[in-house]
Image 1: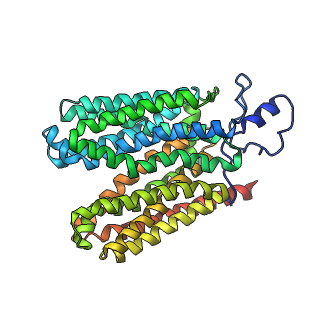
Image 2 (image 1 turned 45 degrees about the horizontal axis):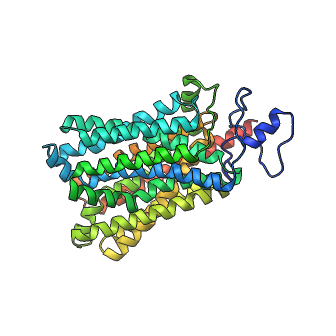
Image 3 (image 1 turned 45 degrees about the vertical axis):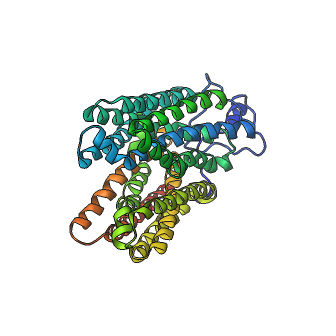
Length: 438
């Protein structure tokens, strides 16, 4: 079965260089996977950097992820302030959040496909500059319509940045550490929920909501400086074309994995979208305790992101199946635990850990099955996750509107996780049939 060993995502640069000279691969270096891009004769890839260089580069890339994660979620905490500032109702101001998500969905595949030929460090810097521009426009937006447009622009580089950053990180380490390298970049996004979002929310509440976007823009500028300083130049795929990149969407394994991300991961969002009223109405706890539950969610996300990389290096596909099962089981526990605040908080932590593990595994799985279009695969993960956000919140709202209470979205999540397992089973069957046909 595919994924029973660690993912082989990119050709090891040292191997590629040796083979281009007619030499065997150096000892201890894995040969490139079948799906890896062939060496390009006109571009010589750098050797795998020393450990210190790789660590610094991954930290710089994670800092960019921290900035992106902060801007993605801070709007939710400042929504009443933003609504007052642009003279809109809270439901209308909620479209500001939707505009960012739409930017992610549109920008991830488009930019990743168009930018596959570009040098990867340059592409990462360009995406961060676009991110800074989007947040600067958000801070300067004079009214509601301009703010919605600015948030759409801010969302455009989100998925493509994580796509190219994941490929850069994977190219900086030996093959058996690539899962951990990618998860380390994703830790920037996870840690934003623990530190960046609370800090930016506090700033926005005390200095005005615009200050939160200014702060994010500053962190983005620091990320640009860090990437310039410590990330080595890495060539793009010179033979890539828009058609060849988008051709990955014709691969059954890519489509099935995107369905797992959209449907299976949507279960977590069905629960999390309504966590505040669940705390107050089901656990009968004051709204003042909601930040504690959100902190538990953030901490669980950090743990799960770190765990996901290690599991991917051991057994990618089986770990993805296990994480999806864990999400479904824990959401079922949430239905029972929602009435007691300690049990609820502990379950939220566990759901976040399992779901964040799933995010990393999905990212690496898409990089594995996308063939040469690995950056597109990694970027599409974030489009799918934003679609999962919309799907889960919508279905959760439907059962609440039907009068089934705030535990019902978690029950919906169980069903979505189960459907994700169906798509994983289909993926395993496709792989088995392909092997049998050889």
